[in-house]
Length: 176
Image 1 (cartoon, rainbow, N blue to C red):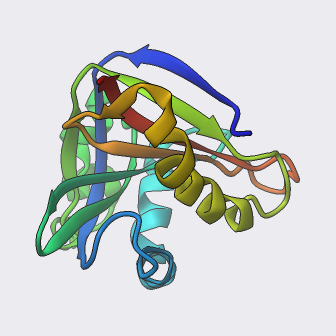
Image 2: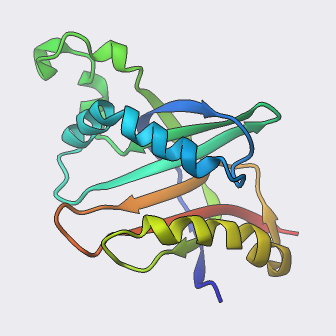
């Protein structure tokens, strides 16, 4: 049994970067592509984490623009308006090459989501893939909902040094 809650979420503005993944969001190749994406873009992750000024490490993955050739996969964080406005200013950041990071703003419209959560553990990633698969193969067909034309959001709670890490999978839904 998958535990979930249904919530209407207000519009959000995130800042991040993306890569085009091949296949479908629930295909077997997604996890490998995600792992490669995370291990090859650590500098960008660190820059965004530093820009948030947050004590807790919370970041988002956004899946959107799904088509026959694949889908866009974003790593993103909520940044303050001031930070977004000054992100590329070397007088503020002390970095002259920020524009090469290719960060972009991602607008997420107001949407109803079914939100599923992993257990809180040191490595919730192992459970994440299974839950994602079960949402589409088990929950969605019997739920009375269908996927809406909105981004899927994965909200990751990864506080430094804490064994209480967990992941929320936000599936955009609408009544069938």
